[in-house]
Length: 60
Image 1: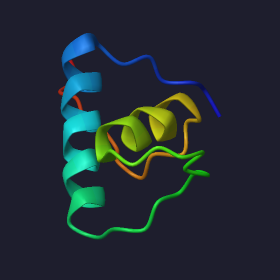
Image 2: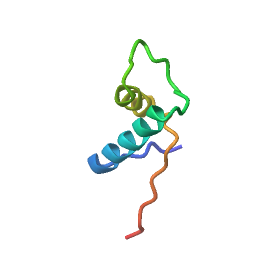
Image 3: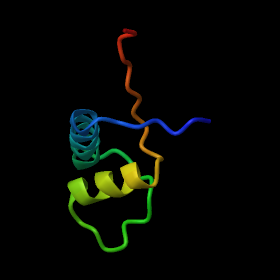
């Protein structure tokens, strides 16, 4: 599988959307390691590449 490179705008949108999901009670996919804030957990999931969000881009 090819590692997808996200733009800074895509990363911001993905992390924000996932943090909102976590805040609303979605299951956390990484060990929390004492992190209590949803934003920190979402960033950890993105770094671990296990975030359950996909990006659809227009073909140019």
